[in-house]
Length: 596
Image (cartoon, rainbow, N blue to C red; front, side, top):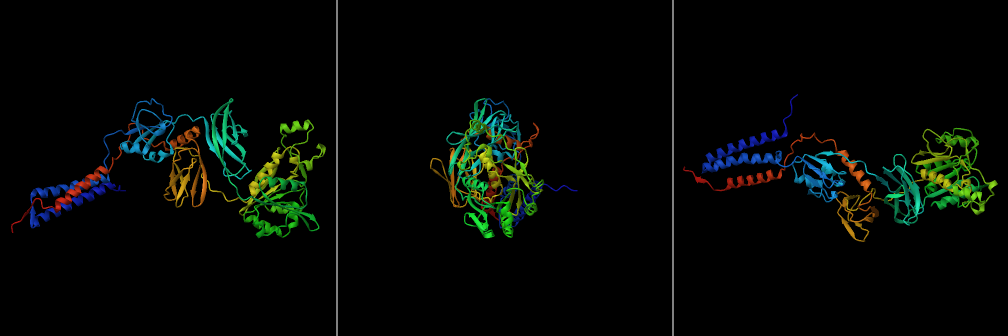
């Protein structure tokens, strides 16, 4: 198999042929011309042909440069002030005041040193500004030890007023630390310790609509190690719509309605009192048109059994995106059990009721009980004596299934709820009986957790608001995409920055920390910018990981391959020689009249 001829050789052959043809043409023209030129003129014309061809060849294929350094050291953040001697040191802005050649970015440094084929990164690593430029050269990087502190922060998505949210963080080098979440007023809303991998999850509550700064604080041995701002964007949105269908009125429905209203749902309840009498709100027709007005339906076994043919309309609405929660009010009859099994829930176990294991009540609740004080969470209209308090039980049959996703378990590990997809909607089965008793026995947070988890898993999701994801720092470039037409950013101080989108994206350099607002034809999108010195361990981890991904293509020391020099000097020389050749061919210098 023959090796194909390289492109430089092909171009050189074409240029050599062109020079030969041009020389033949000039010689024949000189002999046949009426005004023959002097031999010196002909010699200059013949000489300029290979000169132009050679310069064009070197403009297309610049030769390797012989001067300059083949390697550079790049000083980044964390570089020692007294860097060791070696290759020329390029100091990037984040490296600070270090003796060396200052450069605004890596691309500029490589243009100044075209012979550099290898760069050695000193410090913590390259920022996102220099990653693309680093791909054009071989890279060496001996990373420093991983930083200690918050190495990842996950702010919550946009939330609704009064709703709870979760924020996550990852810590490095702080296994015994305590992480606290503080609200804007400085009150601690949650506290936790990281797991063995350093992950921690905290919960807070969004009070009112608007942008707020919560605070994540890390303490170790009583000392504050680090703290960071957690941006929380709270936006008013349409209240999720819940339809509660019950076969009879009772405390379970009463407290479910009260809880759902407090949780931000627009609740419609419908209860059968027997004899065709319906209690609650205005009756709702169980058909596709009516069910499209709801995001979730909560139905007990008695209402399910009484629906008859309307079940097909309900399941059809679920396939179109509606959420459905099936609730057992007691032992199931054979028909209902078979129908729920046909929906994908195995219901393994007996049809009787079993005790439900509850976690130990909070210490404060136990103290109030010992003092003979009624539970603070017990409503006045349900203030039973302690010996008459209801018990929470569960259906002995476990809501499992091949396609079912476990959702809730009691303190003993017994499954209480599971959900599965049906079309574009979801169905959940809850086997807890009389969950309202949690409120009366000091377990109101558990009652809230159960029903918030159930409805959160199946309810039709609301359209997600536009958001700008990620963590951004002041003084660091960020890309804003999805822009069309005129767009601008409102800074925290009230000034405006006009953006020029290119292919729907624009670059923006935030000068200060705080909440900014991106305004375009689609509306206003708030986004948060961290202070330049915030989350240093997170920035160092990001730069370290990104630089490590570029490492590995560096040649061994002393084996740097030569790099091609710049092409523009050769191109300028070719243009000058071509212009001289064009002028000499058309001038009358050196021409004389032939004798005929």
